[in-house]
Image 1 (cartoon, one colour):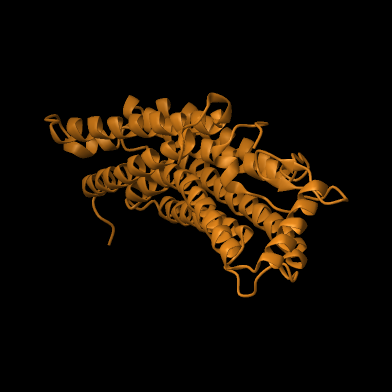
Image 2: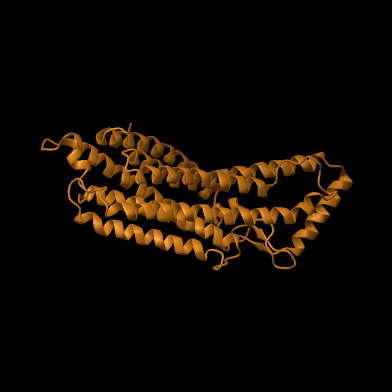
Length: 339
């Protein structure tokens, strides 16, 4: 049995506060990765300012949403007029409802946009590849505009009316489709690159029983982060479609998962880089002098033949196909900066 509207709103506040706290912790760690290295602060030219801008947008938007939610709760439970707290929660034309809906739209569209950008870059800036996700993103934007345009016209108790529900269903369906398609394209690209690099990993210059490759880690990082937000969005879509009051805590879960997953990709990317560096050091000291020289010689030849896309770490083979995407570098380095 679904909880009452006031109980659902309180549950949404609890979920939102807990997730906002987790978001702040991950944001702090991510900012440290973005602005510093083990040797100290990064130079301005080494910082990826696109990531900084997205982080700032998500932080301001998340904080604004939580502030409006708190204001609504205080107004609802201190309200002394007829209808009690439900009168406030059901007021679709109230400014609080409008601002919260605006924040949800900004958060969702920003998260989808950065995912499409990653896909676009990892596919060598191919607009053809991201054509469908961009159309879906524009559809999501249109649904958000439709919702915001109808909210001021609603009366008390009409927040889940037949006018708003179709827009909301389309909004969440489109963003789920965008995430699934874009994440699949990214994983497909990494998987293809991994297949191409297997012949290098099977070379005698590489030690047997090596840990999983950087590509495998990147693939797992993208998939797991994408699954978190997609699962939360599906839960929100189901609750919204059934017009259950569980829609409110589900919405809080989907909202804050955008910022958390964005930060986790940056954090886990940095952790993968550190782990890879440690593994290379261990391999270096465990090799015989001859093998070490052969490995360095092979690495030198490979490096001389490859062009490197600095932002994403994509390497080209002789046919111009990308080989080794490094998503961690995407998250922490400046566009076009020298490695």
